[in-house]
Every structure is written in structure tokens, then in C-alpha cells.
Image 1 (spheres, one colour):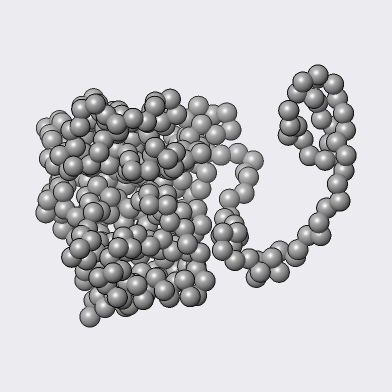
Image 2 (image 1 turned 60 degrees about the vertical axis):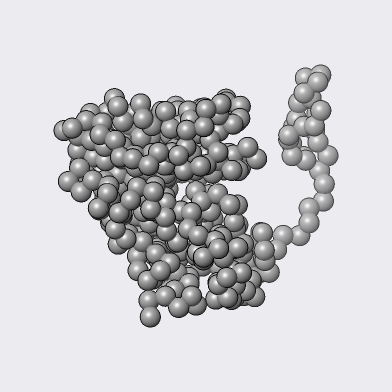
Length: 366
């Protein structure tokens, strides 16, 4: 059995229980950090973009919401949504990921057992939370009234990334919250009161917009049964060296998209793309930079849904100092009017300079 102790440390045999000292090994000479950074390339390069450091203490979700969300009713709804994301986390850890016996997605997507469980949970939350006036799920093309006198309308993708969840790759839940005065249909992403995205990976983290910026919370960390604030007032830098090129089939029809991808590769940008919308965009919050591009063409039409995916992510990224493009006019995705619950859209989102480059190379906004 292999010991987890390091050379030179006192270790205990996992078999006999007796103590022993591991032999020390010669260490390779360490590179100066600045030299290592300059020499870094490819997969290791993005390690220098991670700025997370241990703290002496972490604020709880309740403490941060109390201080950073002035609207008590919105605060209550956000707390309820966090509870839902915690429950989905537990389901993903325990449920076998199999195709659901009853396929009810009218969009034609293959539903997995955890898809249905996550969606049922969200509907249960909407039915029991009196502050929610209307709800809409990515699994169904309609807005349902929950409580006539509710104050908020919630739109969600219960488990984005169904095509990769059986690979045990990171997936997520995406939520947009609109006020009852605008509703969802006829509103824009800019009308949202808040948005949040849960990322289910080795850890579960949630990114949420609060009054003064974007915050990250981690579930079940440090022995705490709940959420701790692990990043506050996240900022996405204007420049980036990380790219996530989605819908690369469109490059066959769009020479300028192929040209843009070639630019990123030729200039030694780091490729970070999993095929999962949630991890591919959420890395911008942890690495503090990045660009996700998803243009469309006649033979590779838009798949991203405006209300369920693009608008909630758009609010998060722009509130963190990033930029978005609707992929058509070059304008912010937050200014696109939601005319149908299944409305699809191209999208570019992330560091401002790279979104500007996307618009320029693809000839948008002329």
C-alpha cells in the first residue's frame, strides 16, 4: 500500500501501523518564478493565472447575502436556489447516470435520470416558494405561472452538459431571475435581477451576481455543511491568453472564424475547451480571463438558448468586467429581446479585447 507522506517525513504503515521515516531524495533545482512563467507554455501556463490563496476564515452565504443583497425578497429566493444546487450536488454524487425511461424534453435532447431529477427539484422549489410568480425550464417550451402575486420569474437549465455528464466531466445549473414587472418574454438579459451558475466538478461552486459584483461560493468546504464565500468581487481582465472555441463546424462555412481560431493558435493562446458551456465559461471567473466563442452558420445553426443560457451568463460576465457579443450585430447579448422561450443565439463572451477581436474578424457591427 502506498504511503501518502512525503520523503523525510515520519509516516505510519497503513498495513502494520508501525512508524517509519521515509528516505529523503535529492530535489531538482527550482526555477525562479519569473523565469518559469516566461518559459511556461501550453497546459501548465494557465497555472499562473490562478490567484486563489487560503484565508484564515471565510464568510458564509447568509452573511454575504445579508451584506451584499439589499433586497430581502431577492435574498430569500437566492438562498432557496442555493439550497437546490446543494441538493443537485448530492444527487450527482449518488445517482447512476442513465438515460431516463420517460423522455419528456420537447426540444429533442436526450434526458438522463439526473436531468429529470434536477428539473423536478427546480419545479418543486418554484411551487413551494411564494415569491416566484413564473417558472420556465430548458426542458419545456413554456412559462408557467406558479404564484399570481409572486415577485420574481425564474428561468433555468437544470443540468447543462448532459452529453458529457456520463464521462464524469463537469456540468452545471444555469439560472436567470427576472422581476415580475418585466417577466421573461419581452424582456432582455439586462432586465435580470440576478443570475447564478452552479458548476458541479470535483467541488461544487456557484457564481452569483450580487449588488456590487460577482461572488463565488463553495459547497461543503472546510467541514462546513453549507456554502462558504471562496471569491468575492471577481474581475475578468480585458486581455486574455485562454480561448474556448465552440461550434468549430461553423469554421467550414465561416472563413473568418477559421481565421480567428488560427490567430489564437498561432499566437500561442492556451486552449481550454471541454464542450460543456458551464465549465468553459466559468473558467473566466477563476482564471480572471478567457474568451468563449460560439458563432453560427447555415449548416451549423445556433444551439444556445437566450433565456436559459446566454442571458444569465451574460449578466455574470459583464458584471465581472467582461464583455459579450450577440454574434450578429456585435452588440451586447444583454440587449437582445427575448421573444420566444426557445429562442437560440450565437454568442461570444469573456475578456473585452477578445470579444472586440471576435466582432472585428467576423465583420460584425459594421
